[in-house]
Amino acid sequence: MAVNETSIAFLNRQIERVRQAGGRKRIVFPEGFDPRVLEAAARLAREGLAEPILLGKPPEPAPQGVTFIQPESSPQLSKYAAIYHERRRAR
Image 1: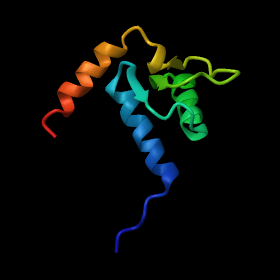
Image 2: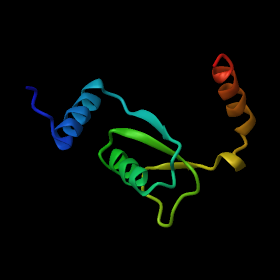
Image 3: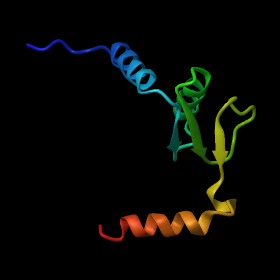
Image 4: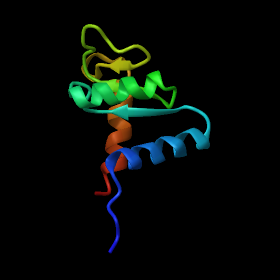
């Protein structure tokens, strides 16, 4: 019978994998309003594991090191919409 891994052990293993991979990656979270996502993004930035980008309006106060993009007012909205459409067209 396999022993279930604790969520903390799993998270620690994933963090170590990210550190070993080197280089900070950008991660985009579409649920920028969710408190759990805000907390996770702040931790990723604080620990230097990734460059989190959240879609949505930044809260007050905004977490340090987290970038917020408001899609509806972004000057690149049509560019992103075209890329999304192209990738989803086959589905």
